[in-house]
Amino acid sequence: MYEDLGLGLVDINQVRDYWNNRPCNIKHSSKNIGSRDYFNEVEIRKYFVEPHIPAFADFNKWNGKKVLEIGCGIGTDAVNFARAGADYTGIELSSESLNVAKKRFEVFGLTGKFFLLNAEELILDDSYDLIYSFGVIHHSPNPRKIIESAYKFCNPNGELRIMLYAKNSWKAAMIDAKFDQPEAQSGCPIAFAFDYSDCEQLLNGLFNIREVSQDHIFPFVVDKYKNYEYELLPWFKEMPKDIFDALCKNFGWHMLIKAIKNEN
Image (cartoon, rainbow, N blue to C red):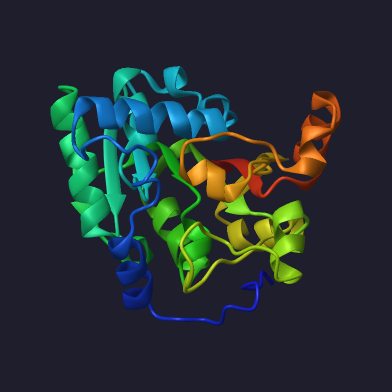
């Protein structure tokens, strides 16, 4: 099935500790963490670097619907579901991330429910029209258990939208060649990568895949990016945009999956 890019299987406590140490995207702004300016800058930067996210999430589609996000992080997608009128619930393994997400909703006067939970052993009192998870499930020691949890709390005809790391990608090739690592911070305990057959096996019997696509190649010089400078790497600088876009669609790190709950 899927494999873990040579990192080795670990327990959930190591995963929790890793993300508590540095929540994802926490350094997307140099402003004071928890301020309105900080959150605005984090959102602008996230969607500048990953512009495919809003279209994939399709926030406005979920107005008046119940949305569960598995792994809400510091809440960038969360606030956009809430702004679009979704009845939003976020779960998160990292208490540090969850506290920032809660603060974000408070700062912008938004309503949502948040729970500190391990998605492999999910316990909730509701069911949802959309279960959404972007870049989270591949960090679980047991991704299938998360999908089983998602199935349990998904409404009939409900939808699953998830992003998983792609085996057949530029990033995976660079990691394999020791030129890159899965996450911005080193020491990521686990990061599975998937191909289409892996996704079919992961969702087998629970969700029916409707659409799979790939996107996202990070094109910037990392050291300058950390200082909020956006200089393209030399091999991307000279590449026409339409060719780069085609590269992303065929060898992007993000495998974007839309699936419908299997009622059989």
